[in-house]
Each structure stands twice: as structure tokens, then as C-alpha cells.
Length: 297
Image 1 (cartoon, helix red, strand yellow):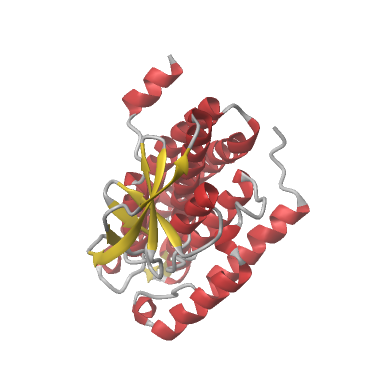
Image 2: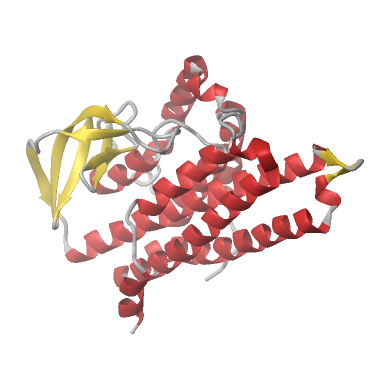
């Protein structure tokens, strides 16, 4: 495995990062800015971000985009459509169903359901309440059409991609909230000095960075594995990466809130938006440690 990104992959990552920085919400108040969201939706749709997989993108490239979108709290549908694209292609406004919900369903009207290995279609229903302020969940209507059946290998490879993409989302959110905390520690002063100059705060931020770097390593391997290893091995790598990154991302989010002090526990601070996204992504395609232990034995 060559861990270096190609020039095309770096360009893809940078383009996703620019979009997230330019049109992602810069504050909690901007989550309600419908004009901004419409511009973001138009940009994501026009650039074909949701059809990367059917356009030939690798697992690494999908993960790079998912990571940058989560870092910038991109709040239009991406995760659900990109996984639906891998299952069924780019035609229509699709998302996927997970645990009885249509996830990432904003602007979607159809949902793909996996019943064992059978792929079915259903309508997206009414919006449901959820912790994540950046992504919409919805009811699922009655399945209306059988679209086909996946082979065991196809199903396992798709599961590896799904777990890897949610892991990338976790890593991106961790990076975003860590940057939020670092920037705050540079400007918030106590006793005449920025709080980031004090060891207690600096050590917390350094430990968070170490967790992020570890997550990058396991994620890159999992993303590479999606297309380069047998499906069962790729899924195992994805599950290991998901468990490690989920724990790390939650710790980083909680540290960010701690570094922000009192303001970190208020609605106006973006730290809780990152934490909500991490908690939601952790539950998607959740894997227990016992399952991984059985797979590794």
C-alpha cells in the first residue's frame, strides 16, 4: 500500500475543502441560512460529488471528500446519496435506509433498502427528529419495487465502503472541532495570556491531535482496502477503523468543549454541532468490539 495521495486525489481533496470552507456553516446561526444552503446544494449537485462512485472514484477518493465535508459541516445530503450511487448508480435522487430510517434524506425522494441481499426501492417519508443538526433523517414508505439482488461479495464490499465512509465522516468532524478549539485557545486570554500558552490546555490539544493522526492511519488503510483487498478483509479493516475513530472523535469533541470552557456548553458554540454529528455517524453501521474480535480470531 502506497500511503501517498496522487496529484488527482490531492486536487479532489482540496476542491472539497474549498467548497466546505466557502459554503459550510461558519456558525450555529448559519445552519438556518436557507440561501447559503441552496447555494451549497447547487454546488454539490453541479460538481457531481454524489456520483463519484459511479464515475469511477476509489474508496480513498470517496473517503477524502467525506472527511472534508464533515470537517466543514457540509449540511446537504452526501453520505446517503454516495452510498446509494455505489449500489444503484446515479439516476434519481436516492439515499439509503439504515435501521428503519432514510438517512441523509434532505432533497431525496427515494430510498434504497437492503433486505438480506435483495435491493428494494421505497419512498422517502416525513422528516424525523434527530440529534444531528447537519443531516436529515426521514421515515421510509412501503417498499415498492425489487431492483435486484447482490452477490455476497458485492454486499460485503458495499458494507466496507459504507463503514469506511462513515469513519471518514467521524475523522473530518474530529479535525473540524479540533481546529475550532485551537483557534479559540489562541484568542481567549486568561491572566494576561492566551489560554493555549498554558500547559494544561496545550496538552489537551496535543493529545487530541495524536488521536486524529492515529485515525488518519487506520482510515487510509480501510479506504484503500475497499477496492484492493478481498471484500471480507476490507470490511474487517473498515470495522477496526470505525471503532478506533469513533472513540477518538468523541474524545476530541469532548476536549474541544472543555477547552472552550463555559461557552463550549452554549448553543452558539459550534462544538456541540460537531459532537452531534460524531454521535450520529458512530451509530450508522455500528460495529461492536465483540464482532471485530470474532472476525479477527
